[in-house]
Image (cartoon, rainbow, N blue to C red):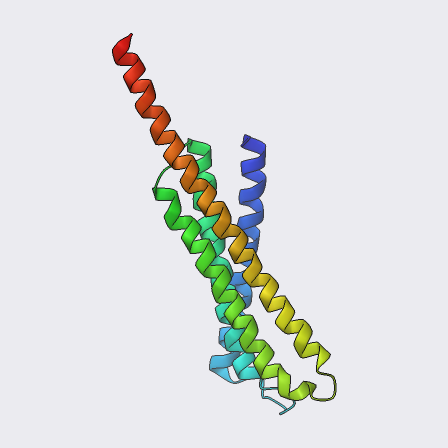
Length: 163
């Protein structure tokens, strides 16, 4: 990964992380202060709590990706230490999907006249879980690469002894 790519990715990750923290702080303030009364049309308090938790899952994924980019830059990504961060990304995506399914369940009673919205929202939740499965497959590829890297290091050591 080139230096420009790493810097650009870190800039994007930093802006998104700062933005989510800012929005989270505002939502927590609204919840704690009670300055935004609900009008009864939607259960806003549960939706706000779910949004705060959803942003937290995004923040976990952002931090894990940041750490993985650091490992790539140092050339240490093909190690067992990388699995911790990949697992963190997978967990964050699964948590986001579960939160989305919760939002879908909260929204469903209001969609009795048009259940298609609920079906679409459920499909989006499945798509989010699909992303988690893709990252899981990438984790398996990383595991294979780590094994190959260990084997290559052992073979190099054996060659060095022979020579």
